Length: 304
Image (cartoon, rainbow, N blue to C red; front, top):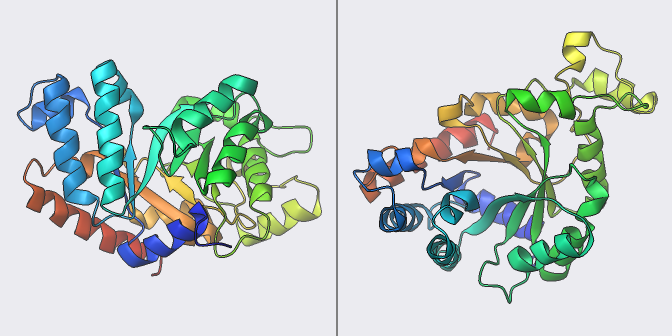
């Protein structure tokens, strides 16, 4: 794999700086906590202060586009500046947009966020597979052409998600498992890690055991477990792409949860924190101290 590809760059940078992903979310409550007004000026001070504090220390920075878009064109322009500042500092930017559509519309989203000619171009984006994983092909193609990455929602932490994600297909696999498998197939034999990843919430159920994974493989996707296990178990034993893990910190996820949730794929984890990193602000030194502590916790939990 060329070091120009997202997967190789992400794997190398995570080893150098640590696996932690710093979320940049100018939420109204966070601005108020910092003593800022919930307006564009407050969002700019929050986002730029946080970016400058973390982007040289974290391998990944993840702006959530909605918190910028709520301020209109000025917010989008601010997002452009945040992306540029983070990339200048050497961080890989995962733009959290969760887009999902078909045909030319999906191609336009891919061009907006993954084409280097766009002012919003990031290193990777999050996408939604609700229209079918195949509908995301324009994003996969654009990412491959420019050395970018794509993270597909697979199993999310919100309680409502399980009613869709854990629904069963005829072959016995959950919808989430089929997404995991389809994305994994696109990575092929990539080494050390493919560029196409998934999103797995930190507070979901446990990864399938090795025995369950072997049984699933030998029976064409059917895992013979109890109903309670089937509601949460997933198999990542063959997955070799990056795994973005939101829900860390304020939402209840802990570094010690990573092996339970990801099993053999823990080495590919990108644990994402937002509120817990921003909370010590606005003092940059306090933010950096929090980041360093979390990096060490994540490294220890991942066996690094």
